[in-house]
Image (cartoon, rainbow, N blue to C red):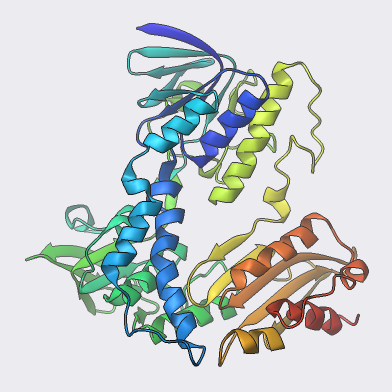
Length: 462
């Protein structure tokens, strides 16, 4: 065994780990970044990047069809879509990402990292000692339900759904969350006959009902069959076909089955049981990223592994906080626990933006509905001059939630074509606690879809 010493050891070389490591290096610390698979992580190769690369061509074609006078074809060129997707995923080669790691001043270490002692990480026959901190950024993995036959059915998870280069004639999708609806629409537009199996009345149950209903309508318009209130009871693969039995006796037959029933933290083989933590559980952290359950103030975590806000952009945000906190504490500086400082991931509690890149898109930040007596909801159709010009027959909807006592915005949900670009304005208003009287003076451009802000404020009486 060889032993090496660094100021900080980061386990997990995805975007979250990269950000934590880079911020610590910027603070003058030496950092080792441990990665067992590919630098760049899940988002770069099997999630955010390739999934959006698959979705964008279908969204662009549908958008063009909504504007008379634009010449468009009948269908997507799947080969061209896959080639573009592959280029964005760097053909699943992380040489460029590892080069960035080295150029940033971080030391890459290949292999599985396990926490084997206080401030100690073992990677194969290498023992990495951390003078100040170990940071866990191992992300999450697909959660598969316990269904009879599922383990032997050779199903897709999100990884196969975002990296496959052959369009299955028939695709079944189990789960109506973000991954389920995005991939159902992407593959339907690439030519698959898609059947979506969901337990509830609508997909996207974490969003307002109007969002799930609009996405379900969009899926049906693309030929997706939506099985609502459907519980899968068994799965089998016979003669190449996947068969999904439902509780009501129906059976869905497909060439491939995507299981999109959620994700769980990747802590199974981390070694934290040495410190009394349960493998497979989230690592609970405070706003500085510190894992208080482990004494000594040396173990930190950020990203999906914490369960706080399992989105790539939020994980990167938390990682920047962690890197800055560790560097400051290593320098002996005072690290205030106050919210909205460089040392606290405060936005996790108030303003977590998320976009579902279906057609229509769903974009939301903050609370999605009134949760307290002082909250007031305003909900309007996104029917303004900007949307009418954007697409013939444009349909969309917006809901905002206002704290009536403080007179500030606390939540917003947008549904419609291309609304992803609208959510950051709401995020800024929430984080900045902009009083509605001041927000009234943020004049929206005419004619754009942002005109809806004027209508919303008028509805509030301004």
